[in-house]
Amino acid sequence: MDLVSDVTLPITFPTGEVIEAGINIRPYCTEMLKEISKFFEIIIFTASHECYASKVIDHIDPENYISHRLFKD
Image (tube, rainbow, N blue to C red; front, side, top):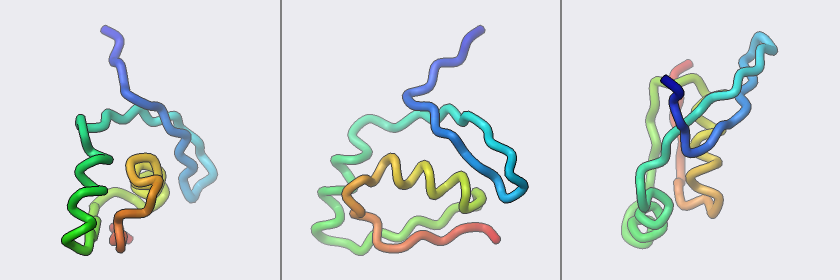
């Protein structure tokens, strides 16, 4: 069974290993960020590593609606 992703992003880990990570984006995600940023400060907290999460956030938020990013260390 082939899994289909919305987008594939290259992720470079601190070890130097590079993987191609397939991610799926919820419908209207970017539009929702734009709309709620008018009323709220958006802060993302994730247990994912920064090298992975930053790539995903950069992809879903090219206009920088997200104010702060907090990652697992």
